[in-house]
Length: 385
Image (cartoon, rainbow, N blue to C red; front, top):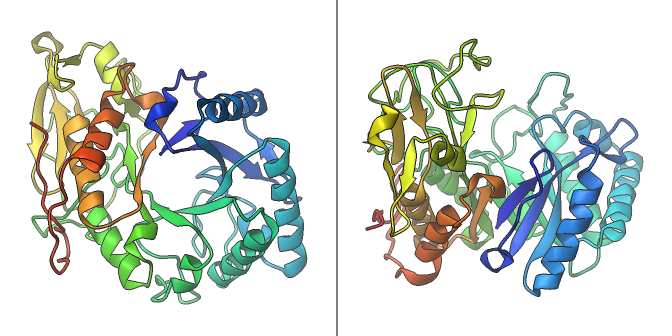
């Protein structure tokens, strides 16, 4: 699975690589209708659905919300009348674009999220009733998923709920958004830690293993949990030769005033494919990647989080590559999870090296037996050879 974002240029997709594609994002407005945040989003979605269905294998879901699109979620699900209006509007869009499912990306129930959002103590209960109504309203064949944090939804007391089994009965799967953990903070930290193997993280609940534990312990079956994988990293103006695990979380940095060696976007993100096009990484014949000596960067590996990172005298870039994504895919398979979803399709290379490494570990490598899960480390992790 993968996300297809509407703010990027149209992508040439090899549909044989994907079972589902989530088109991101439709935004709820103050009247609980769905709107687009870019002018050509509707055209992109129509073409994506047409091409995906023509492939004979790939289905398309519409992702609703996102970080900047969750402002009206709390209000939209707060009363039976509002929920009915919201669900009816979703159904209209579902039919209009010939969709195969809906992905609810509310960031976050019971928490403020982005500035300007509203929140209520009963957000999570209202969301449950909303999804129940959505399930009753959409066609029986429609898939419903929810993008979630590493911790379960917040309850009225502000703490993660202990029982999420009610949601498991309604959604086909949840997607743990295990990325953006440290963003472009300085000193740099891992973007998408798989584990807290050293047991010293200041965010011990923010990694793939902890997320798996938290949701399964809250009553979610492992086979209904999908692991989110990033196809990007963060550029930090810091020549650190190691990633931090502890420290309070500094605020998000703004765009650097000076030009950097690589080209991050306004959130200091850099896609994997841009690390290649900017001359930092080079593709080897076997689909692996190595650092170009002339780039001034070195590649190191953070054992605590299972994260590769690049560092020069001026920059540090925690990111993911075929090796680390392959390990996370193997982690998903070893623990009986429902699969993985890459954010997003535009970050991969023209040769699909990221998704190929993911598929290799899920489809061809044997399962490593897993005993009782331990916090931080679950299953076995074997780097790609």
